[in-house]
Amino acid sequence: MSDFNPKYQINNLSSKIVAGLERISEAYKVLLWEKAKLLGLSPIQIQILIFTSYHDITLCNVSHLAKEFNITKPTVSDAVRVLLKKELVAKVFPSNDSRSYAIQLTKSGQDIVKNTEHFAQPIKQQVDILDASQKEDLFKSITQLIYKLNQVDVLSVQRTCLNCRFYEKDGKDSFCNLLETKLKTSDIRIDCEEFQLKNT
Image (cartoon, rainbow, N blue to C red; front, side, top):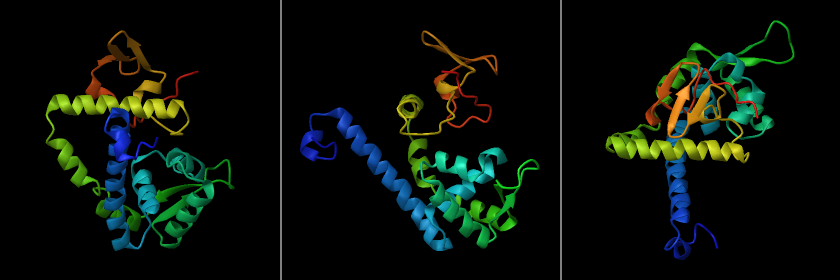
């Protein structure tokens, strides 16, 4: 039975959650499309610009961007080609390899990011009004779901603590061996700059 069948959802909480997450993903799409249409860009082009603005250049190449957004390399290449043509990004070639390149924002690209990076603000405003325990419970569920989806190869990239070599869990306590500190649920990171994949 389909999780999107309202009759099936009545008695199945997991299906209700799946359907609810789908509705939230639709909200993201709508908000991103609104910005994209105004600027003559596609949603993925805006996502690439925002990602490039805040991540190390080693992550800003076609191969990694394809994994990051769970899309094909040709799709990313097409998006990057448009961004290059519009002079929103520039190519950066590593000194040891003239065939591969990363991208970095131009001044125009930085301006686009300033105009688009708050596209999800209506969602954040609703999260802000939840009380502290509701937020913590929601965040704990989200981090667990991201981790588990990565484990079954639905999400190819995740930089949350739960799959990091510095993360340690002892009973109910979590600990970061890099920061040498105990972690509360709210300390767990979704996108950590120091993330290093745990050896499997």
